[in-house]
Length: 323
Image (cartoon, rainbow, N blue to C red; front, side, top):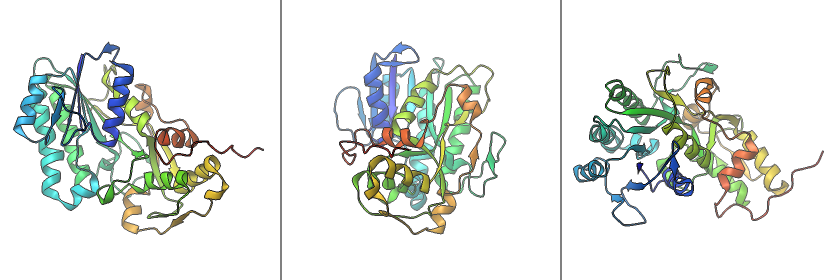
């Protein structure tokens, strides 16, 4: 099996590449060739495609590689694409369309597309389910939703075998600057682990949908082998999530890393940030779970898995309080 990962140098992409190298399999088949695509790659070689996803030369190399499975993660993140419409349009919309057109054909390779919960919008009902109207509040979400529709249409035509996964907040990313508006979800975890003060731009009561990068990578790989017979023709599913408040995450961090972490996190809510990223209700992800997709299990497991391998993680976990 020949596998392509776009956005391979990004946080989720690098986690996925590590998992693929660790297991050497996708959908029960051995990975015989793994190609990595990103604007800049730490490694060079025949299977490294360095360049812009919208570049004709990059797409020519993708066509030459002819993957059986493509994990499409390359994107300009939400904050950056909102600030620069033209860049977001070129990468997130036209770049994805160009990739789909390049891959499409009689072979109908599997395409696992990293979409986003940003397609749902704000002012959501108490329960988000498959019938909830999709009203993206930012351009990033609008472009992602448009590409979900395009991928489903290519699949309907038999040119691709697509499956879109709507990714929640993935933690704990390294500090990534101002381009990622939901970065506070990772920042607060890393600060707690490192014992550093942090000012959070949403309130303690703000709720979000959480997942570790490792679990996300596992779900992406699982999605490539899902049996979609009888499934929703839209071919788009939210990943199963843990719905946690910031207070839940902070309390779990104090339990894991020690009581000296209490008081490190201050909350200075920014209404614009909280309205988009801190008001997530209950999610009906039963269809996703029926396909074998999973969450992290618990807040404790989320933090442990999210911090595995990060330099800020303590060398020894504090023992939880005994009852």
